[in-house]
Length: 335
Image (tube, rainbow, N blue to C red; front, side, top):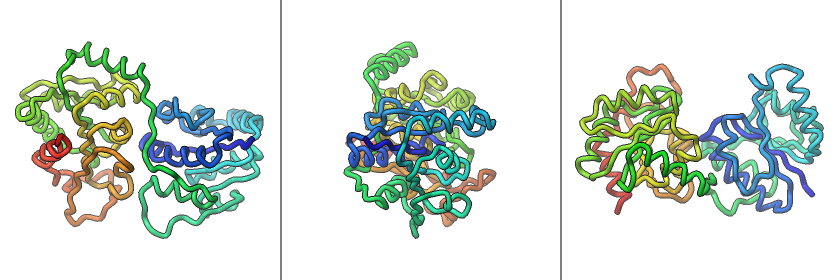
């Protein structure tokens, strides 16, 4: 039986982009033992995936930061007798991990620092492509052709029931609601709080939907600032859901409005109606992908996109998206 290790990327959104790759590997090798080596923050989003036999948590900077812990991981990987490894993140440390784990076939994109440690070096694409296609391109290099490019995040009945209880405890029973996900892992990717507040009031007054603000614990202050600007107070669920339960909340929502973020891709994977607001990042590279009910709002203001200037004070690119644009997009998705 073939034994395959997939070395994952480090972020939730990117991990969702990897799920079509994982499914493609399973389709090619239906009887193989397939494990994923991934950062702890990404484990939850992979749990329950029918194409994965084992999830191995690995944090090279903290949990496995010292040599003793790294050697322990090497010993563990050796014990699993993997014959093939795909490394999806160009990393010297992780490629060395595979070498010392004595995995004979190591497939990844060529790089100056770590490429010489691979047994099959694939040249990076000559043109920019969506991250889903970037990962699938690596699969294609070894003869694996995907049947689908859709995200795959498993949301269970238990997740749905938990989401129902959280919403009920927050005062939402049978009311239709729209989820606003205002967070983002860096400032310029976030649509202004005042716009989210105005949008929430417009949705309540014109569309008759209750507003739910979602996010992690770190987003509570942001949600409270948005709530403080609204005439019709929203329900704040920040910090009350794990990722899968958040996906279940999104599944129950009439629509989800989100910045470019991991939760936005969770909403797409859940099959929600999604309006994705983009500013400095490129929807062509990291936007929603595959089948789904989503609309991307992104204005060309003449700036270079993508732009990773996290200290940008102007932020004109994302401010160019108006409340009216979002309301119109929600109406289009509702038709």
